[in-house]
Amino acid sequence: MYRYLGILCLMLIYTNGASAQNDHFEQCLSGLKERARSEKLFAQLIDEVLANLKPQPRVIELDRSQPEFTQTFASYLFQRVTPERIAQGKRLLKQYDTFLSRLTREHGVPGRYLVAFWGMETSYGSYLGRMPTLDSLATLACDQRRSAFFTDELMQALALLERESLSPADMRGSWAGAMGHTQFMPSAYRLHAIDGDGDGKVNLWRSERDALASGANYLAHLGWQKGRRWGREIILPAGFPYAETGLANQHPVSHWKKLGIRFANGQAVPDVEMQASVLVPSGHRGPAFLVYPNFHIILEWNRSEYYALAVGLLADRLIGAGPLVHPPSIRETALSRVAVEEMQTKLNRLGFDAGEIDGVMGSMTQSALREFQASKGIIADGYPDQATLCALSINTGPVSCL
Image (cartoon, rainbow, N blue to C red; front, side, top):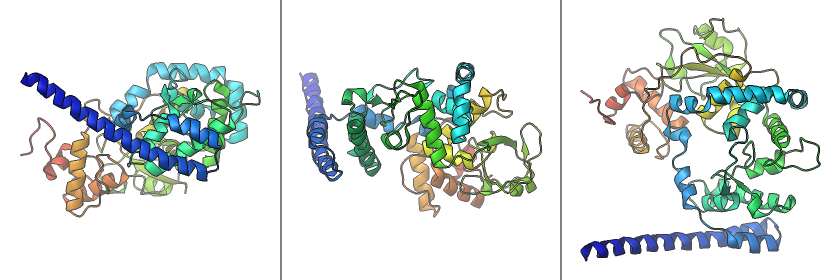
């Protein structure tokens, strides 16, 4: 009897929680309707589309567990820059050679990068996503974490729906609202998607050429520098000042050359004034990269450094480059979100500004960690290795801090 009473109580708690979430969503939809009216969208669109949107709890779960923030660099890279993806990318690079060469002439973006984005986003169109775009965007717009951003994207999606005479059922994609072969957010789709196959229409779901052309147009708009690479793998000398690593520390390439870095293939770094940063995504024991302005353009597509590195490395592999000279260790262990939150809390309490306590190893957290490491005489690479965690009195596993 008590067992059934317990189950009944759990059901009531779940039902009440779900009801509260639905009430919040309905209240939020009222505000979204007002915003849509202020954007002067068709009243019929507002009444028929917004009124029928449904919350998607799975979207919130996925937002809180993005692989860029929950995996090590080794795990992230080796799951995406795979022999199969490289081989297929090479075939597509050859198949679309004439078309991609035209895009390079018109937009300045080499075809290997467009194919690399395509491979990273949807594995060359093999999976475009099945989540209902408008429902996903509304769910995220009604969530506090990035409400303003996703509210704007929802308005852009509604305007796109209106402009392209689409139905809500046509608009499916990722949990975050990205759509088509190259996973454009609605704002990018509306502003930068172009007709690549010459049929007078733009459809990033059905036309591979539209998707590739739109990618080239978007990257050119973001400021892609013609004739420049994304970056290179490098070898750092003994005694390198790791406190200077990170995207916030930009210096001319000539500065890094004076510090003794070399390209991983043994070639000397040129004495040029182009701005660059040094990244060590797995800490001082892992690979190092010198990244250029085009790396920042890749980050405009996706803000994850892991993602941008994977795009650049995949693009290089598509034209014959070999694997990393100094690959990251597959033995790397990712910190849990709870452990990162604990680390951020302790850094902030100690006077090292890690920013918001969100469980994400972002740039502010890495910068704060470098400052803390330097204060303790630990190599200041911004990577939470065992020595750093022990110095913060954080125990994350079987290795004890003595």
